[in-house]
Length: 300
Length: 293
Image 1 (cartoon, each protein chain N blue to C red):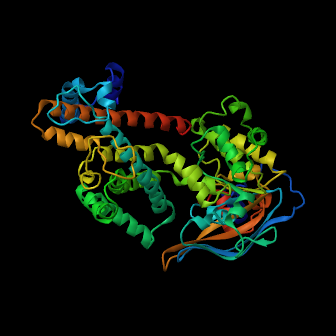
Image 2 (cartoon, each protein chain N blue to C red):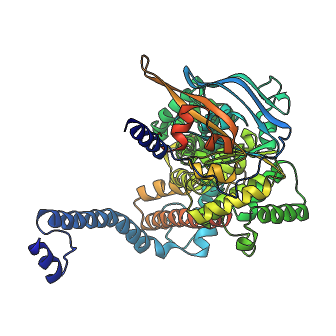
């Protein structure tokens, strides 16, 4: 009794983490986590620095807009990647138009309507299988069912990219819809809303920013794909303004063919195209983030 | 000597069973209004599990009816069956008759959506939509097809005033409803329910997450709006039932030891003063005096 009293009066209270193994463990784990973070950052920084160092020289207004991609032997400064920029924007854009609405609707069906039914389970299983299909197989698939009958076109490339994007959009949107608390749905039902109303006016807005993030991942993935386009759009050196007919070209395809060349000019164009592709994806991400933030400014 | 002991025993008994004082603010019994809900011999199942058995009671117009009882006694289940919210739970099934103003609620041509537009619900946990305060209130009227901005403004103001929230939020109607405190958020949900001008408001433990001051405001609110609405409230707080309700239904749990199942039953239903001061059933008496549950 006396000892306790004098102790509590005399000495200052020590509220630090008890010394010994527990404190050391905390320090070791903290260092390990920082280390892991730095290790993850290294390749990313390396890629970006290399891209800018080797590609920045090629970038100019002419490079981005000139519609003729010159032969490999021609040095940098003549012609440009305009055709590939247009092709990438058109093909990826149309693919997004096909895949994102379909994917989001599929996720809505899975989470809000399908329940545990046989159709919902089938769709869920199929989309998982689709995630694992190699991208070149998607290209071959479109080649057989579309290109052989209707010829090469940017649209055929869009079909192949949409096939790639679809399972990603379904999976990510589904996960986001699952996170919407049930109490929100109940609140809406209690006001006399129909199921479709609940989904459109409460569930989808609440999940919007997550759905956009998932869709952007899919777009970025598709924009950088080469393999599915080889069999579907072939490649050309001139801008093809018509998405729906005739061979087209895209930045990844140009990177692929120019980087293989032995000529310095072609190599420089490949680096420039790579930097352009990363920049386009990056700008797209930022724009989509801003737009989403404007739409969801009251959701937090 | 023996007599003295007997007297002592009686005194002790009286001490064990103190009467719960009904405060002055308790509403005076008035003539019963028209019946809003007629529940007859109703049992509610979740799949094969019988959650509530054989409930019969009548809810009267412009009264506050309280459901009290221990956890798991099915009071929330009965409440949710009154606006067909149980339909949303797979496997939920209602047997027996529930009439709303003489119309069978579970009739084959009854639309749950139409039912819920007349019979609103406030939940245990405040669930404002992730929208602005204005859009939260305007949500219900918009569902009902009101698009006129002036009309919506009017409804939003009126509903927030009814819910005693207007003064606190009138300058930030375009801010998120998620930024409100717990009590404000619950009043927002009540305002949202009142905005569609329902006939009945069901409340599922609306104050269980609130402090006494916020609870007091919501109780004041209930007393104020009951002249226009009929209210059914589930509460764990017996004091609350005595403070606000005109009638009280006491539910309890029947345990089937053989199959190890529990089923809710309605033990006693009557005027609140009678339930708390002169319960007819020993289980009610045990509960309201704090000996059980």
